[in-house]
Image (spheres, rainbow, N blue to C red):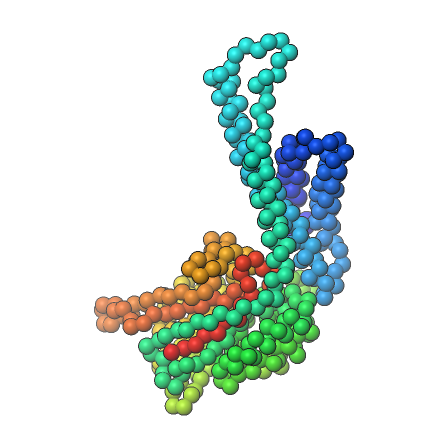
Length: 430
């Protein structure tokens, strides 16, 4: 990445952005004393140059495995500064467009001969309002991102009641806890992580389902957290699947054998935790005389940039006769791409993956995140009424398929959350 043309184009853009932002800063500070202006200008360029130098050097700094959080935090602060300047500059750009239009209109329609030596009309001053609005907007964005650092372990419990006409009587009232996207390689506070696990334990679930991304890249990231997540037990069992990060596709391996050994170790970790890892397969859950299917598929996505490991046909095969089916599939785009189209008798799909982008707004009746422009289903509950063929004519099935997307237990990249908090989902079936 650091040697790619894109990387250096980004650095160049940051420099140009700094220069552009500085013009507005000069305008706003023009009324200050010379000494104050010197302090402002020195502080601004000192911070900006330091940020760019650190960004260039960051890939070469030998952070240890346990210090990846430090790298991510530094990067997040620099990215926050960049985003703040970018947002502020959008206000400045609107002002500059206004000034340009005003200047052109003045030249074309209102120009008049000026007395020798006059400078009247040659310059149009910046709007103080737009300049300050831009500064405040940028500062607000930066402050919000810094505040979000404190939210990464603020686990929220979401309770969802789901009703199905075809759920067997013995499974009415089944309490499922879903967690997803643990990303243990990002953690730095073991006690805080344990508090989240204790919240799960306090729910006394019948069944715990983990929908992928236990690690960022390497199985060894779980080393310090085995004695945390092995506390998760449930009467019906704890079941898990792989997410896209679990395969080690995003780091360099010395050989294919090393990568395979990492994946084998991760499989052993699931077993050591007491979790039943489902690899394109299903299990039958029994309660009294009733049975339902729990299907687990490896990672499969409708997005072309993710490698496909999942085989739903293989996982589903043999469950056809069971009256109710739950599917664990890490990536929610899989739901519309294959499940709704080809497997209308899968009643409930549980997914994760998006993290809600760890940034957005989520209040009763309204939710928004930039990730929704990539994923139509990105957080919460979604429903689809499938058509099932009855002879030559399709008929609407009683009830509907449901998808629930968990916003993730952990975090990745940005070491914080803004608006979209880490989630523990409690699903009660009826």
